[in-house]
Each structure stands twice: as structure tokens, then as C-alpha cells.
Length: 260
Image (tube, rainbow, N blue to C red; front, side):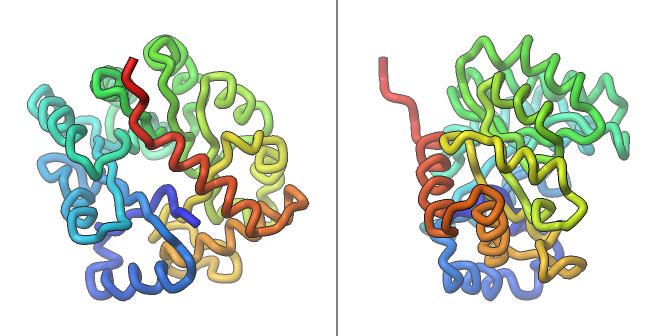
């Protein structure tokens, strides 16, 4: 299976990063997509450095909404250059976070719009982070991303059926994290049931949001197996089938488009 979203450059993996990666491979995780936002500019290349060391680890680059205030034209140029790296599969995670508001909302929106433009120029998908900002996120994607015809990932999907359908209508995949295993996550579980097979992905968001039975502990990519098992249970299929579906979807989404 594939962990479609983890943060292997996190300080919480500083002491045992290699062991964490080895445990993931041993658990049956064939590939990992490590997210290249880190602590934000000036260093946006941490995930690429990890991907360069491991054949089966790939990377994204991007400026998280928390760090949108650090975004400027020079960062945009660096992102555009990094998107040409053969191990970089997407731009992200980008989006809006109105829960913490670490950057002003209008600054977050401007950074999101500009990064969507850069990803569109590179013809690569985007990875969206949205928290307490669904309406603005959808509005900006509708205006600035949907016309490109390119796909993307609603990372760590935290909405219900209504948000799921709006995301699907905009051409996005839904990526479910360990939150789907929490007993009170009924709306997220409902979304996991309705998501069409071709749009389904799984992730850990490690080191955050460890699934049951590891809830409250540091998360790691090996634990994506628990998320896969829960999604399989919700959809009434085998874990093997969820593994097959989500792996195919990830590979299809992140493969370069055929030349026209």
C-alpha cells in the first residue's frame, strides 16, 4: 500500500527516521509521499532530500497556509524549479487554515492562488489542506484550479458527505487519515463510504493523528495499515481490495500526463 501523505522531515522523527522508514516497508508500505512544507521558507527542500535517499519515497514541495506570510516571488521561483525534480509528484500541502490563522486570511488566499498557478504551469496535481475554511477553499479552487482540468488531493479529509461531494465535483481525490478510525468521526466515516473507488486514497499525516489503536501516540507510516483496514470495514470489502484500489489511484494521479 501507499502512504499518500506523511512528514518524514518532522523533528519528531529526527532520532529514528531510518527506523521509521524501515518499519513502514516491513509493514507492507510500498511507497511514501513525504510532504515538503517543513517549517516553511527559506527551506522548502527537506522532503526532496529524503526522497533522493530512498528509491520508494517521493516528495512534494509547497508553502503551508501557516507559513503563507513567508511566501514571496523568490519562493515561487524556487517552487517552480523544484517541481521539475523527478521525485517531486505534486505541489502541497497548500490551502487555507482559519483555525489557527498563523498567517492573515487574505495572505493565505493569495499564496494559495499563486501556488495553484505554479502547479498548473507544471501540470502537476495539488495537495490541499483546509481547516474551518471549506467555503473559501472551494471558491478559490472553482475559480483558479478547476479550469485547468488537473486533479488533486483533499488531504486528511475532515468533512462530511456534503464536503466530499463538492470535492469530488471539483475533480479531487479524498485521502482518509487515522481520524477515520476514531469512533466519533461519523461524518468522515460516511464520506469514506460514499467516495467512489477511483477517487479514494489513504494516508497517515505522520507524525500526527495516529489511528486506533495507537491514538495519542506519535504516528508513523507503518500505521496506514490500520486506516486501510477501517476504510475496508466501512465499505464492506477486504483490506487487500482497499490496498489495490488506493495504490492504483495514487499511481494514476501522480503519473505524468501523456503528451498531446
